[in-house]
Amino acid sequence: MEGTRVTILQEIDRWAVGGDERCILWLSGWAGTGKSAIARTVARHYDNEGCLAASFFFSRGGGDSSHIGLFVTSLAHQLAECNKLDIQDDVRRSLREHSRIASQTLQDQWARLVLQPLSRHRRTGKPGVFLIVIDALDECEDERSIGILLRLLPQVRELSGIRIRILVTSRLETPIQHGFKRIGESTHHGFILHDIPSATINRDIQVFLEHRFSGIAAEFYFPDNWPGARVLECMVEFAGGLFIWAETACKFVEEDMFLAEERLNILINCSSDAVPEPQRQLDRIYNTVLSASVPKNCSQPEQERIYDHLRLSLGAITTLFSTLPAAALSRMMDVPTKDLLRILSRLHSILDVSEDPARPLRLHHDSFRNFLSDETRCLDSRLFVDKKETHARLVTGCIEVMSLVLKEDICGQSMPGVLVPGVEINHVQQCLPPEAQYACLYWVQHLIKSGQQLFDDGEMLQFLREHVLHWMEAMSWMGKTSDAIRAMASLESITEVRLLIHDCNVSNGRKLTTHRAKNVRSLTVSSTIANDF
Image (cartoon, helix red, strand yellow):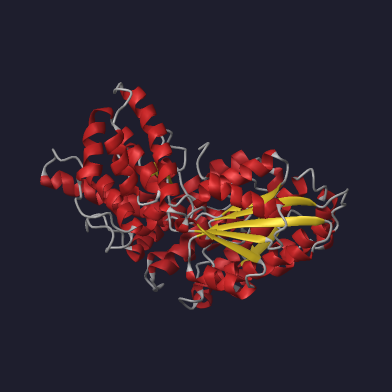
């Protein structure tokens, strides 16, 4: 919002364009202090100036954006498109010289797709300043890769003829703190958001609340001065420096015109204690929102059913490795879409729930995921999400979806030499709807997280016997053949997968032809190769 976070934005700008030789600025803080909003604001400003080299926003539960796999290649693509850098030909040359770069180590990718092209940047006049923004590094699921990345980033200081500045935001997670300690203070400047004077933060939250409530008052036909200065002061105090508290509170109040004043009173009167630490304040509003989502005029059995549906739905949404539309999630959970949307309709303050069932369901803030799976924070045991139990339910849903959808030659091409680029993506998506693609990609990960084992008479072994080759074909159509191989390797950590695959009901000599091998020729996967996996 214009006129807020002025101090920190000025600090970032001074670091980026001034004489500070430290190439990295690490902006850290508690969940909900506004790190991502600042990162987006800075990225937008430098993009408008033509000096945003690249950006990557990690997101737990965001599929490819939850891990390091596509980080360097995404940056390289953006660097090549930055007009002021003019290194597109150099990126192309690196790709030609290292055709298998996407499957190589993070160090090799960084050196060949980022450092080498940037080193060839043709300087004209004074060295330009270009910014790379890396947001929410703590939401990258691979701690080891975080450490490697933090050792690689300072290498941009060695570039001549160009100044690269890297803004990194994250929570104060231990692996990240250790990573920055290892690279030393000479390479990075640390800025902790929650150490900013509270008066400055409270002023910004006051401006935000005044703006939001003026809009709510106009929409709901309340007086212009509603809800009054005293109420806003209470809300600023209760926010405890967390912008996510203020945002969630506003969404909670504006969800229902007829309950707006009642909900506002709940927020400011539910505790007479001294203002607690920020996390406890955030937990308090999450507990309040969840409690208000269950109608009080229902019978006890009806309330229990609502609680069960809420726990299962929220558990799935907060545990998924990638977002899914309501329609796809309902098919995986075997719940009618209209029932799922009805269950979630009272949770707009913490979920992005669209009436369009094809639009992905998203959390407004990742802190809700951690809240729901921590029984010391989620005070209503009826809504507490057991992670292992939820992963187990999702494994079952994945297996059921794949068993229903997968079959030989699922895209109906008949000719084994057809390449993936030669088939319209809409046709592939029709044959492999979102829930089937999700199930194919993540069933093994859910299985491992659930702590389950494969047994001779289990549904997963039965699935492998009947559909393992169909699954590999589907992964090939999705361009995820290497992910299938890695998934099979992961299975070895929990069972003797070689013996299981060998036991699959595949006759000798039978072959399943999939349709992608690096866009060059078809990949024939025989039962012998399957046994090798």
